[in-house]
Image (cartoon, helix red, strand yellow):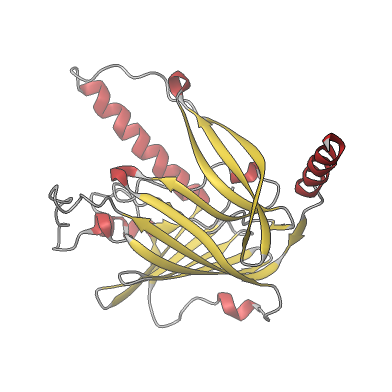
Length: 285
C-alpha cells in the first residue's frame, strides 16, 4: 500500500512538472464575477459618481471576456450589463489601446508601457510630496516590492475539459504580513505573453487594482482563481472554453476606423482627478 501511495505521488509530481507547450494562437472564453458584500446596501453603499453614475461599482456582477491571441497580438472583448469594451495589446510595440462604450458614446485611447510607467512615477511623487507637507501624517517605511512565491498541491478538478491543479500565490508584504490567492492551472500549455485572463487593473479608486500578480511563477496556464478585493468585494474568474482550431488572422486585431482614438494623457479626466484610466488585465507577467 505504501509503495502504491509513493508511486501515485511520483506520477502526480511528474504530470505537474511535465513539459509545458507554449501556444501562439487561441481564443479563450472567460467569465469574471465580482461579488459585492450582501450588507453593502444597508450600510449606505458608496455613493453616486460625479455625474450620477456610480463608477466605483461599475464592474460588479458578471463580465464575459473573449481573449483572442495570435503571436504578439492580444485582444480582449469585455461584455456585461454596464461595460462594453475592447482592449488591444501589441507586445512588439509595447502598446495598449482601449476602446469602450459608455452612455451611448464610443471612445478610445492608447498608451505605451513607458508612458504608463511615467504616469505611475508622477503619481508616486505627488503622493510622497503630500505626505512630506502633512506633518500630522505618521512616518511610513520605505516602499518595497512584495515577495511572491507559488505553492502547488496535488488537488485536481476539470475546468473547460482540462485537468487543473490547485495552487496558491503567496504574497509577503512589509512586517511579514502574508496573503494568498487560490488558483487552478493546467500544466499542459501556456502562452508567451498571456498567463491568465480576467482581473482588473488600473481603475484607480474603483476596483483596487485587483490582478493576479506573480502568475509568471506558475508552470502552465491559469484556468481559474479567486481573490479578495477592496471594499469587501470578491472576484471569481474561470475559463469556460479554449478554442485552438478557429482561424485567426491579423485583421482580427484591426482598430475600429469610425472613432477617434486619442493618447491616454488626453483621456485621464474621464475617470476623475487625472488618476488614470481603466483597463482589463491581459495576463502579462
